[in-house]
Amino acid sequence: MALPQEIRPINSELMDAITQSSDADWIPNPDDPERAFMRVLWTGEESGRWMVHFRWLKGYVAPPHKHLSAAHTYILSGKLKVRGGTFNAGDYVHEANGMVHGATTALEDTEYLFMCDGPVIFFGKDEFTGYLGWEEIRRMQQAHEAAKKKAAVRKRTTSKKRVTARKRTTKKKAA
Ligand SMILES: [Fe+2]
Image 1 (cartoon, rainbow, N blue to C red):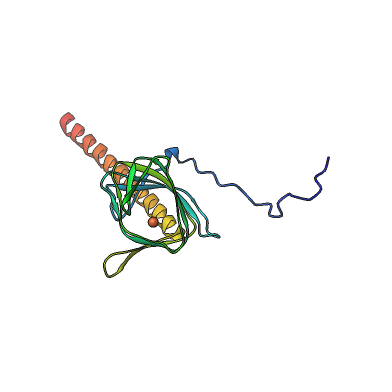
Image 2 (cartoon, rainbow, N blue to C red):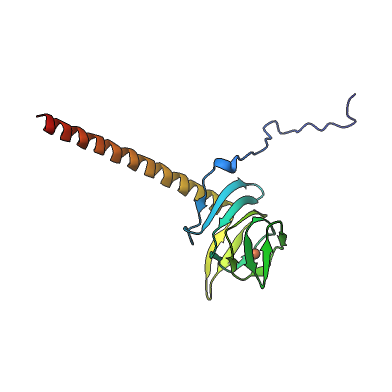
């Protein structure tokens, strides 16, 4: 039986995006690399949307910000203090485009899914302190991968030097 209307995609290159994040790295957030991390699930260059899995350790304080797009938050575990209230595991929040929010504090080690329709801008008392959108997320991913590669090269070089030094010592002993 044929469908009454053609539904096959016109774009033959259309694809789903799958991120197997269970073994992805936790990328540290530059504003507090000891306590704030994310796993990137998806960034959409056409829509500007992005989806990440945040992990904030107890005590991390995210700075005040304005949403330049709507955002969806779903708390997986932990507890966040926001605007006089708290979000707990299982809570969902829709943050409307244009909202201005004060600092958010992780009261416990907290993990949450965050899907953003576009950018967020952060500010201090008299200045803007940061801007986060899909491009910044990708730049952070690239910087993390580059740092990992550099560290791996350094490790290989160091262990080669150690082996060479050990061989020299062994030769000296034998002589
Ligand atoms: Fe917010």
